[in-house]
Amino acid sequence: MTVSRVLYLIACAAPPARHIRTGIEKAQAAGWEVCLVLTPSAARWLEADLPELARLTGHPVRTDYKLPGQPDLLPPPDAILVAPATFNTINKWSAGIADTLVLGLITEAIGLHLPLVALPYLNQAQAAHPALGKSTEFLRAQGVTVLLGEDAFVPHVPKRGDVAAYPWDLAIEALP
Image (tube, rainbow, N blue to C red):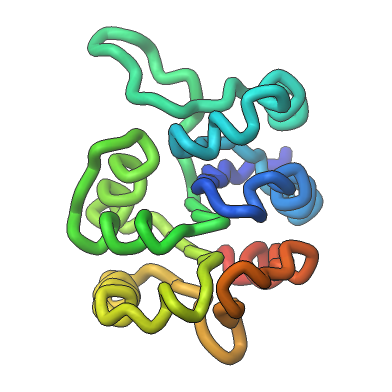
């Protein structure tokens, strides 16, 4: 009997989110049962695709906290991949801000000791901001695999990102 491993694929509003199907399919090919969770902005970007993404994963796409007393619609995760992870999400995550479902899940996941991988998508100007280095260092110290730097995601020139080169495979390979 094969035991399914559940991956929460969390997407923030950055251009690779528009290609989230690629991330889902690569994770499924690697043996993961994928549950998709989107930031509110990413959900707006993908609004027309949400029914198809739910069909592809076999789970509803989550964007908001559930109400007290409502059942969980997703199975508990064995790992979480935040891809694309934005400058905003990385910094809020590091600061412990949980004002969205996405941030609530990933801030709590640190305390639950779940495997966490973050694959950023940001430009060189954002990467030069001092908050990013501090946030990345903090998250790594908490056990989060942040795929940012020479052998991972390299920030691009502002307005010149190459979405086709986004390293989904690197993120999937970093999962346990």
